[in-house]
Image (cartoon, rainbow, N blue to C red; front, side, top):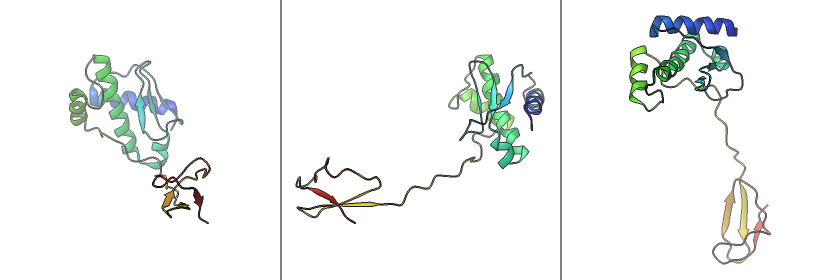
Length: 150
């Protein structure tokens, strides 16, 4: 889908569902990572993540466009356009727009590597995900020297 097709889709949804024209620009923004789209207050642009088109169906894209149009029309009317505002929540219900989009990025897997350190005096163990410089730290219980266990 091109930017021109997206522009036509946004204008069509705005007229059909909101009964108001969309007079600004709708574009794809490949720099968006975790969100499906965003409404920019400064220039009134609607930016859509192109991953939505690749990973999900057209129904998800239409839902994101409706969500961003809720922000757009409420902001231009001077009403509450933020996620927590009652005006915004009511317009989401009226237009059957989603509150959140489906996940676009796979969740990051945390590193399972655990570094084990031990106090030479009292034997207290310290497990850490990150390595630490043993010369900079002492045991919290007895102030003994800490060494890395192999």
